[in-house]
Image 1: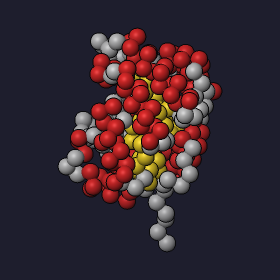
Image 2: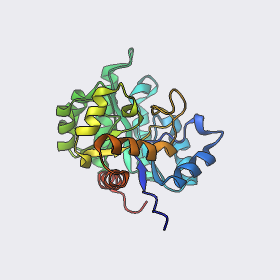
Image 3: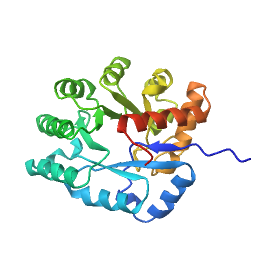
Length: 261
């Protein structure tokens, strides 16, 4: 008897991105054949709400998250928050995201980022939705706002903070997203986190088309790579891939309150 293919959830996939326009059907089929049954597709700005909605309507298992990404803070306007509220009311997402703070990229207005982040936390709180957090070099400041504006958990996407910051996110009901970045041999800190943090705190993601794993190099990432990322995590933790798949999928379903999507 052929063993059943494990089921995976890609908790962060920008599957609406233009990089997939030429072969989106093919990449979707490849992901499904590999066991990636669910993709969470976050928006990054008001201007791509419709693109995310179109992809999620067309591809079974692709579920939307609505949010305003901190890297595009210069393009966000105050009435985009009203548009976000309206979109959530019209089409309830699995989460509010991708939101957060980026203190790595130079030239981004930190005060404006904090404003949009805090306002979107309030929206998530008011709609009882988890959040998908962009947390590049910003974990402490993210946590400060999360302690003030309580939301029903979420995912710290592409987590790369300290063990202490990880524990703080977990205490607030969050799971930590790991993807292709930890597969690089020189990513010593990330690999240590991936090996040592509780498996119950980890969810898997690709961040497609970004953050490619080591076997892709500088090429385009895709949701179909998630099972191999899971295998890399299993090897790092000295577990079988079925255990990693089962646990991380259950973690994602729990934190995002998914049923049989």
